Amino acid sequence: MKAPYIVPAHRSVLPGYLDLATRTRIAGWAQPEAGGEPVALQILDNGKPVARVIANQARPDVARAGFSEVRCGFDLLIPASLPVHERHVIQVRRESDGSELSGSPVVIEAARALDEDLQRLVRQVAQGAQTNTERENILAFLADVADKLLASHARTESGQEQRERYSRLARRYGPAIPQKTRTPRALIIDENLPVSGRDAGSQAILSHARSLKELGYNVSFVAASDMDPDRSACMPLEQEGLTVWHAPHYTSVEDLLRRQAGAFDVVYLHRIGVATRYLALARHYQPGATVLYSVADLHHQRLNGQGVLEKRPELLALSRSVRLQECTAAWQADGVLTHSPEEEAWLSKAVPQARIACVPWAIPVRSPVKDFKKRRDIAFIGNFAHAPNLDGARWFVETILPDLRAKSPDLTVWLVGAHLPPHLCWPEGVRVVGHVEDLDKEVLDRVRLTVAPLRFGAGIKGKVLESFAAGVPCVMTQTAAEGLKLPRALASLATKDEKGLKACILRLYADPERCQSLSEKVQAYVTATFSEKTTTDALHAAIKMAAQKRKIAEQPA
Image 1 (spheres, rainbow, N blue to C red):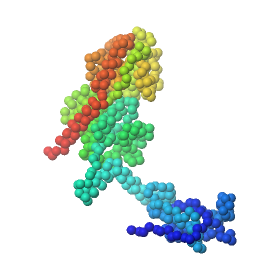
Image 2: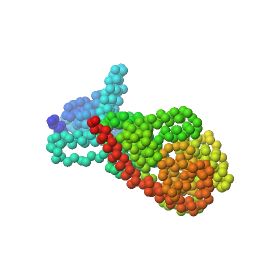
Image 3: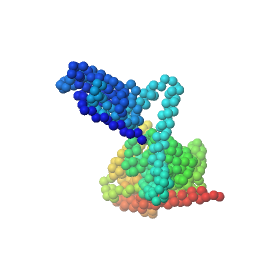
Image 4: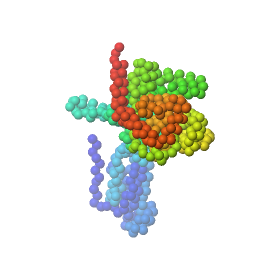
């Protein structure tokens, strides 16, 4: 081992000061000799002379302070900067007698990170390349360094580094070395990061993430379509203790699965587009993980309904293609999650080999509502980029609203949600609200009813449940009520046809006391069916069932 450099002691100290000492520059001032001659200084690095300089530069600041003449300064640029990976002890002393300048020595520690000097050196090397061959060599070197850094980051984040360290200690000292209990890890893959309140899909996936945390998993997200998400989208998830994987550490979902190979216990694929692309990759890179395919809703059923209603054969063809993809994904996954009992039954019949579970999502219930007499108007809530919502809004305004206003002229329908096409014109009695930041305060605290006049669609409708959770009755078509299994006391809210929809809205709108009674019942229904405990228990059972299927599949024939 190399002995540390020892700074020799000197009897005398040279008046002046060493102002700056870096790997590239040394500056300061030294009092001239008795006859006014500038001092010759010697620069040493770790005891070895590396440069010589005359202290004869102008330093008016020193002269004004009364310490010396004007020309007493020095400022030396080191031609070849000092190595960044070594520790340097910089000394400045008078050449004639070795008297050390005040402020000397200065210790510059070896660079442990990409500090300013190291960054400058890398830039100089890169900018100094003169030919394409030199540039290619530099790029190859930097790419290799970056790959090693990314691999090291992934090993640390996945816990592999800790496991390898324990294995080394166990080999050396035996199994008596205590091992920290490993926390199971779950990875959720979706097109984009979920945003609370944005849509039913976000609400469902956030609820399932919280349930996974409750079950003891370390939960993380990756957005397939946005590997460089805005910080505002990451922060709410991180504040809940959830991890978000993104650039620059990972360039794609495949990159994450590959670099953290074998590190996840559950891989949760949300929607068919994600499942189609990443199910095989999850199997390849995470062979020990339980792979779950969360359908959100059966897309092919929605496409088929739209194709039949709008008489569009191309949508019917697309529906058949998506149906094949959904059935294949259900067959390949260890477990399939759906929110609707109807979709669970359909998948069980279409793919008998699949392990399918109906797992709701948790919906918090607000305080009871007691002011229906003061409330006015009705609201249709939805994201109007979603085809069933836009079709339902236009159909309701054109077909249902005129008869409602003929019986109740003061009734106005609010269209609440983003992406309502600006070119559409709406008649009297329609209030276009658009996107709102706080749905409860701006809408659900003010209207007497909500409506869900959907003519096609699939799965459970999130805005119906949000209305129920806020204590606001929702009048809906049978399509909108799919998967809810409403109790007898609420069954009348799901109407069979256009006539029934009109009659139910008029009857409830004119009866605030009936709305009050229904408010209590819809909140009790949500509490019983969509609680955190119900969701967590159902998800736990689904994972156990899926894990059993995986073990059976791994057994030799």
